[in-house]
Image (tube, rainbow, N blue to C red):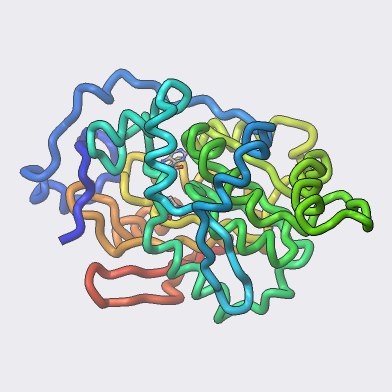
Amino acid sequence: MFKFGFDVEVDSNNPFVNKNLESEKEVINTSSKTDKREWYKAEKVTIGVETLENLDVYKLNATTLNIADVPIQHIVTGFLIEHITCNASDNKDIAEAEQTHSDLIPGVYEGGAKIWECTEDLLQYLAKSIKPQYWDGKRVLDLGCGAGLLGIYAYRCGAVVHFQDYNKDVLTQITIPNVMLNVETQTKPVDEKSNAIETEMKIEENFNIELLEQNLHFYSGDWWEYAELTTKSAEDKTNKFDYIFTSETIYNPQNQQKLLDTFYAKLSTDGVVLVAAKTYYFGVGGGLRQFEELITSDKRFQCKVVWSSVQGVGREILELRFK
Ligand SMILES: C[S@@+](CC[C@H](N)C(=O)[O-])C[C@H]1O[C@@H](n2cnc3c(N)ncnc32)[C@H](O)[C@@H]1O
C-alpha cells in the first residue's frame, strides 16, 4: 500500500480536512516538530554559475525520457541524492529528509528531490492530447515542480516556463541543472572553426543566461508567498499562465486552499490547470475526491477528471477551468 513516510499534524479546525480522516487517525501521528515552523518566504532564484561549472558531471549522470518525439534529459535521482547529502551544508532541507528517511517533512522539505509517478502520467497525457507545436509561445507554470520535467517538456516545445518549488535547494540542485541539460540549443553562436571538443566547451562557456532567463523563471517558497510575490511586482502584472501543471501536490489537505488560491491568482481567464495526483494519499488524508469537494465549495473553478488509471494505487488527472 502506498503511504507517505512522514508524520503530519491534523488540524481539526481546518474545514478542508477530509472527514474520513477520523478513521485514519491511527496512521497519522501529529508532529510537534512542525508546529512552530513558518512556511518559507518566496524568492526568485537565478541560474547559478556553479550549475554551469558542474554541467559535465550532471551530463554523465543523466538519462533521457522520451515523451512522444520530445527527449527530456534529467539527472538520475540516486546520483543527486548522493551529491546533495555530500554537500549537506549548502542543502540542509533535502539532507535532513534523507537522513531521517522521509519522503517529506511538512514545511521543511516537500518532496521535490524525487520524480513522483504522476509526473509521467501527466507527461504522457500532454503528449497524447496536445500537439507539441501548441506550446510555442504559451506561458506555462510548473507548480511544485520538483525535478521540473513537466516544465522542461513545455519549454522544449517552445513555451515560456516558470518553475516553482517549495525548496530553494531543490531548484538550485535539481530543477535548474535539469533545465540546463535541455537548453543547449539556446546558446550564443560559437566559432565555426572550432573542433567538436572545443565547440562543446564553448557551448558551456557561452550560455546566455540573460537570454535564458527571459523564458525560464524559478521561484522557491510557499504557494501563498509565491503568488503574492509574483503578483506584486510590476514585471508580473501581466504574469498569468495559459497552463498550470501540478503533479502530486494535493497530499496535504492543509495546503490545498493555498493551491487553489494560487491557481486563482496565476491562471489566465481562459487558462487550464492540470492536476496529476493519486486518488488517495494514505496516512496524510489528501486525495482527489476530497480535493474536488473543496473545489466545489470554493465555487471559483469547474473541474473534471480527464484521465485515470485504476492499476495499483489509483492515479488521475483533473482539469480545472474558471467557471
Ligand atoms: C511530492 S512533491 C512532487 C514533485 C513533482 N511535482 C513530481 O511530481 O515529481 C510535492 C511538491 O509540491 C510542492 N509543495 C508542497 N507544498 C507546498 C507549499 N505549501 N508551497 C509550495 N510548494 C509546495 C513542493 O515544491 C514539492 O516539490
